[in-house]
Image (cartoon, rainbow, N blue to C red; front, side, top):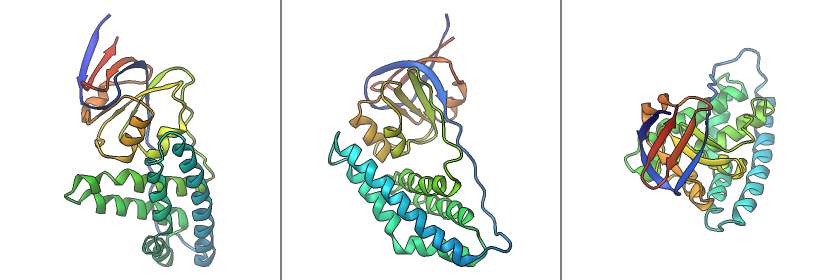
Amino acid sequence: MQLVEIRGIGVSGKKASGKAFVYEKKVMHYHCALNIKPQLEKERLMQIIQAAEEDIISMKEIVKLDDENCSGIFESHKWLLEDKDLQQYVLDLIDQGYDLLSALVRTKEDMKIHFLNMKNELFRSKVTDIEDVFERLIDIETGYSEKIIYPKTPFILICDEILPSLVYQISTDYLKGIIVRFGSNCSSGTLLARTRNIPVIIRIKNRVEKIENNQRLTMNGESGTIYIID
């Protein structure tokens, strides 16, 4: 047996072990469409915002059972959905010839760039909240066509960032830890993982490429140490 050691920054929990599950992030592109009916696209936007708001309210109530303070994360997601300036941004893109899906993807990417360029890390960490809200809208618009099927055995999730909703979408019977390429100590996803006592290691950057699906891992959320067991 051979051990390969990787080090990141431990920000939550203690030790965990399980098989690696590498989350392959879906890549979506935006474009101007031909022959769209802007009014229908705008009406659809209002419909999916309402559906997303109902999902977020349900999520907030679930989180509230663990930690009332952390449930405020999803209250902020609701505010983001209701933000008139953000809604207008999407509507303006539709007027420019984008279909609704492309307008949502474009808005998400533009907002992420805006926040990532901020100097304060706390503001930069809000990128995951923006992504979470827009991924929810995109999933509703596409009919949840690309739902991820997670293992039904103990596993450690490998991802670029922790989206807040993700922490409560997977049972802790199976999700034993999270290893993040980037990440922030003050992101909403990290805070929720702490609430659920899920070990988290962030900022392993390109070293994440050493980890492959189904490899056995052990991790220490205090020291930031990861061992790949070959």
